[in-house]
Length: 428
Image 1 (tube, helix red, strand yellow):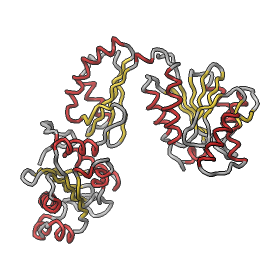
Image 2 (tube, rainbow, N blue to C red):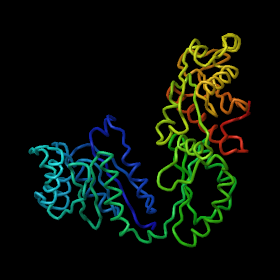
Image 3 (cartoon, helix red, strand yellow):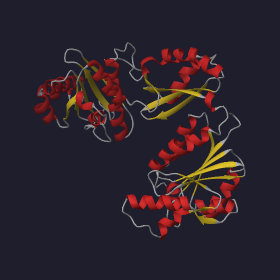
Image 4 (cartoon, rainbow, N blue to C red):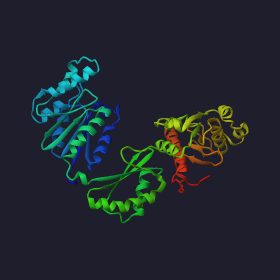
């Protein structure tokens, strides 16, 4: 497997100027990794014919597979097809399969094709098409310099489907020993990528070389991958995986099978399993926790109401937080979030509550309560827990992390965790 190489070429002026953020390369890397393939080189260039021809010529001599992303559209700066024809010294021809695809695409949308659209049907003479179920531009599959080249549109949704339905099945037939590749993916929360690696390295100095360990940060979670490339190594992994699970304990949200399980999704599933309901009382997060919960299908069975009580007056009038409490301890305090949580439970008739109050910044901090200060309360009316954090970062990061930690603390409550989260230094 080590001598099988895949490279990635991305083209587009918008990528070079920063007008579009490249997410496609991460998507491609994730999908090919399931076959045990790593991308050993990635190049991004502008929509320039000479640069594109030069890179295709060079990269096709350096790897077994080259995936080119972008440049298949209808405009004059979409140059991939023409560049391919130049490199392989073939004429561009009007591909009948591509024409049929365009006609059907237009018919489905009651759309009349124009000259610009038809440009997408002009492909190198010996090229095969890669079917695009959702977009107008077909992909291109061609062999140059003994390199298999797959060309895909830049639209992320189109790329994802084409990778899953066309390119990955094709690669599966070409990758040697792909059946022996096995990847175990653990999704964790509360451990930074470098700390996670340090923990594993320190705990297992005798880690076997045949089990490759990889890490991928996907804020707010970090994925740990265990990759084996032989049946013998896979059997060995069954002995080492429990050791990793014991080390990381409840910092593991789930083992990823198809798609990652988000913290909100995990909480909703656990609430359903235990037949409990949740409510939220938010100040500094402005409804973000509620939004994340309700983004999960079926959340209505465990979540009926939440409250965004940004001002002190609303905290008092809606959640029955005592004026005396706010005046004596402040809105950002242990006492206030406890009363917010209990008030939300009473109003929503829920079993469990999350309440948060903090200083998101960039202004509003004091020496005693600097920007980034937050108090979180979670639990039942009779068993309410609280925790104080100072989370440094901009306003959006602060809100995301408060929401993530709040939901993770509820997740730990629901699984009856006996382990203190690594992001908590001392329980209050």
